[in-house]
Image (cartoon, rainbow, N blue to C red):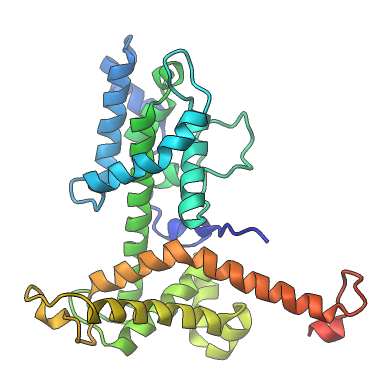
Length: 317
């Protein structure tokens, strides 16, 4: 079974905001710089400005993270075909982003799938960029000058950083939604039990997606929940393990007076703690789920006593 877990069907879609995706508006608005003849450096500046708008001044991506992303991309970058300016085309940029997230966390982001048709180099209406990135960014990516000049390594770094920021924002939006549904203020600490309740509902949203009717049904019926989501108890245990891992870190962390209510020995958790744990789930869930798939496969093979590649329904159920 594939180790990739299609995360885009869940938390990325939940945080989608209705933004304009019409690149024409961008071209009209910025015609002074993009309808005239511009060189590669101006395109680069436009892309950096656009990505900067998407990242925002309050984003969690800093210079250290950008340097780490560049280091991860460099080897793949050297292997990609370049144009006469030493740059890559948009299709290769998309492939580079896909490989980065697939190798880092086994995430598959909507709009960056390797199965996308070779000639479909634009961003569709269902892509994560179209859903979440301001039209300014899309306009730069789809402009004639981007097509002519291509993208350099720094452009790829900014693209990946922007996607990471979108994932971060999506996690935060879903987490806030669940805090609200459970009537828990985000500015108050939670007990271990309270955080576990948040995580349980978070995992349901993650597995079911944005089908509100299905979500309300399974959340209201614990027995149905266990029947509807394969290996649900193991998923809950996985989330519980993330909380215990944070507790272990606290116990071995140096004492601090900055946040006495959240010290190493305190069984209380802030919204920032919850977000940190959610980020860990995003990055490690695919590996956990792959092991569950392997376990399921082993069980099915044991049922196939005649080695026909088939399992009788009586044994399966």
